[in-house]
Length: 272
Image (cartoon, rainbow, N blue to C red):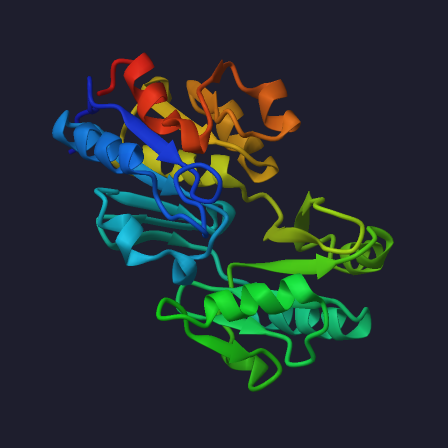
C-alpha cells in the first residue's frame, strides 16, 4: 500500500560549515535553541553537507537532526538508517589515486566510514585539515595502502592555481564533477563529486523516501556547494555571510551565522 503523503510537517535542510557550525566556535546557542524548537513543533531538521558521513560529528546530530544528506548528495540517511550510499567502484578509485599522484595534487578521499589522505603533504591548509580530521571523529588512513579497500563517496583536492587542477579534471571528467572553492592565490580546494550528484539530488532522494512534497522543503546555506540545494527546495535561504553566488540564486536571506541567522530565519517562516 502506498504511503500516505505527509502534510503540514515541514522538512528543513541545513548546511554545516558556515551555516550552523564554525570550526573555531562550534554551534551558536541560538542555533541549538532553534533546532530544538523545530523538533518540538513537529518538523524535520536534516543536515545537508559536503562533509562525508565519517566527518559529521555526533554532537551535531544529537542537536535533533533526524536525517543526513552527506558528501554532496551521494550519501543519504534517515534516523541512522542509510537510504543511499553511492560509492566509487574499485576501478574509479584507482583512477582517482593514480591521477592525483600523476598531477601532484593533495587529495582527501571521503567515505562514510573513513577518510584517506596523501602521505606526501606539502600545502599548509591541507596539513591543517588533515590534523583537524585526526581527532576523535574520523578514521584517517593513508590512501596508497591497499587501494582496493577504499570506500569513498567523493574527494577534496587542494591546489594553488586553477591550472594545477585542469588536467586532473579533464582526466576524470567522465566520472567526477568539480565544485571549486577559491580562497587565495595558493590555498584553494575543489570538491569532486560523482557525475549527476549534488545536494539537490540527495534532497530529492530523501523527499521521495519520506513521501514529502517538495513544496514543504526549506534550506539554509552559504557556499557554492549549496547552490543546487538553494535552488531546488521551495524556500532557499542564504545566510548573511554567504558567497555572492548564493545571494544571486537565493529567493530569501537571513542574518549571518554569528547574528542568530538560523533562529531568525526559522522565526521569519513561522517554523519556530
